[in-house]
Length: 186
Image 1 (cartoon, rainbow, N blue to C red):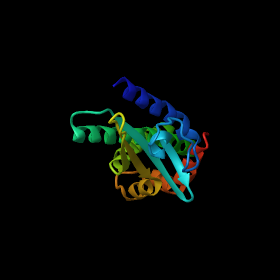
Image 2: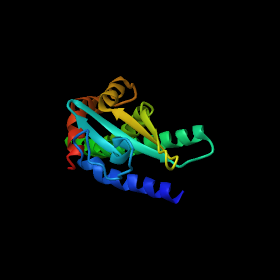
Image 3: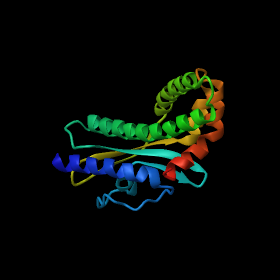
Image 4: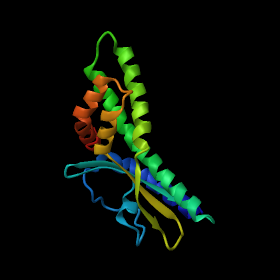
């Protein structure tokens, strides 16, 4: 139990350092869990691979008596990690959009943007997919890998009816550059 908690803590700490500076799909492993897939050792990331941009989160659940509960726990933790990375992306989008719309209605714009970001985050996180799982044969811990593609985010933001048209247009035109700024560690 202590080992799995320590492993999970290490994954979280590494994700903070990796998510802002990674700009490639292959990242040097830092967890060094022997026999684990590379994504387990890489942790949470915002990645750019060619024209593809995506958010990835890794969740871990310790060995439990209920395999279904253990898998569900790892999946939910992976989705929560994607939510944290996506939240950073949306914070940058909010800051950039607010900077471009400074006027007499700045407070109103900021409130509209904030509400839109909350709604978009909920909509997009429902589309997070679990794309891989791995069970550590030594500890019984299960790791899940969740992913949200930036194209999916753009599709959701373009089709939502509750979003301010100006914000919708801004995100559609600038999502890729905002993402690229985020992974460069602005």
